[in-house]
Length: 347
Ligand SMILES: [Fe+2]
Image (cartoon, rainbow, N blue to C red; front, side, top):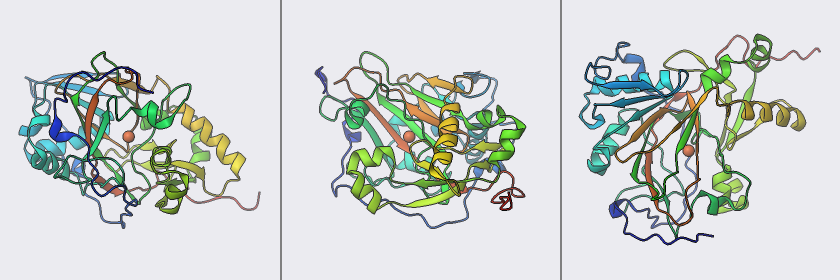
């Protein structure tokens, strides 16, 4: 249980989480023709890669940090370039942003550039707004992720957000309002394209035909509303295990440890064993990076390129206040349509 006292008032009281109507059922999203702004971006990214912008790769395989550019001032073309750059690099970290202070309407307007917004069934949103805002909030009363999940040895919870519909989340915005006073609370990201590339040709050909069952009855939702309700109201779909990224065209290992837990057509032991390998494989430091939050940081990532996890290592009782908005992109497509869904029944 939380022990420390959260001493001060929140820096952003207007963004405290509210849920006046309580928990809602998970919303199913009928398939639609998705918008992929990254596909129309200038590959040279002239609005982002200006001479006055400091651009640093966090690792060669994932993550790029940008200083000297304001997200809120970008043109439509600049926003398109963000979609392309996030698709290529997995995650972009924009430092020294005014984004937290531009108001609800502008925040929504920028995120909507990338597609219709996901409405979360259980997370709180700022009073007067709606469930398109997902407030991630910890303090002495709300507790933190450790409080939610109960005693465990560790709290890595690698996942892709909300992948239980045919259209899946794309260029996602996540920003910090207030950091834990004693530090910690990073967010880690891992490249699903680099994780795929690391596999042998033999293993890749084993994965190409496969599809994976995704359900909204995730680890987090079960913790929030209980197993029975989470299962009763579950929204589910299947996606190819290896998708073709709609912007970069690269194969991406579309596994999701908290949401996708069954490979179609396999017996339970087979599916469990293969998914255990893949779910462990994507966690490697070879493919991942850790983003340290600073005041004014905004992270933009592509959910088809990267999985992520919170790092809930900050002290119990300390306040951590973040906000996320998730647009939906296109429907997933198999990386190798000629092989997808084909199994040899005769062997
Ligand atoms: Fe998440």
